[in-house]
Image (cartoon, rainbow, N blue to C red; front, side, top):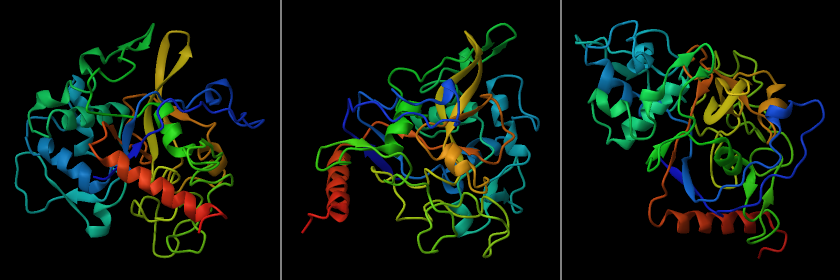
Length: 341
């Protein structure tokens, strides 16, 4: 798993007004995107290859009921049912439980979908606790699952943010917005500023299959097209020239990415968690709705029913990674600058 370090701590918040007719107060990102700390994000969304390492630790135990469990671990029940990622049950495995294998090398690189916010949170706990097979490794570390519940009065009772000291976590909306749109060299070396759209641009991404001249996203494609029969078949990282200022891939396309952002149906009543970005196979109108700095959508945290809901993860930067990214900033600036020699 590759990570990009997001530096420039204390960057200025977004000051680009929301476009008229797009979203409402909950979607207005003006004043958002300032992050006081340095962090890192996975360059791509979590893929089948990475997800299988997690799922097979637990699906092959045999002590998780086919329909899940009545406690927090019920969020793992989906591994016995329908899913949207490039794997199938291993026909050579005889039990206990199930084991999964990728369809192919290409399928290993598909972004996983049908992932609920709570399941993504348990994945972060698993990473935090060293990728073991103990069920207790899923329950705490990055997120405290003992807070998870539901009240008819207050909605979901889940703690709103990660725990102090989390080693891996679901990025919050400010971290995601900054990583996708803030460029520390927007107006020259160390002269930071905001792009209004993905991929260091002020224009919307261009749909097209990988390799199509100018194509930067798989949003808006009409399937079947060029060998891809349905959404979700284009591997992560298939548009290597379309990167955020920090080197992130697929901030447009792939899957809609969960963030920590809470949504309230009324004051104090938590109903949903947010996700950012548009997904492979979304209608073309989603480029404007989900590929710009003023948009965020949402679903209940336990929701497993969308093949277009996935995630990428945040972590503490490793020593030396900031230097590598700083060099990449300079290279990107020189490529864009008419004064570079």
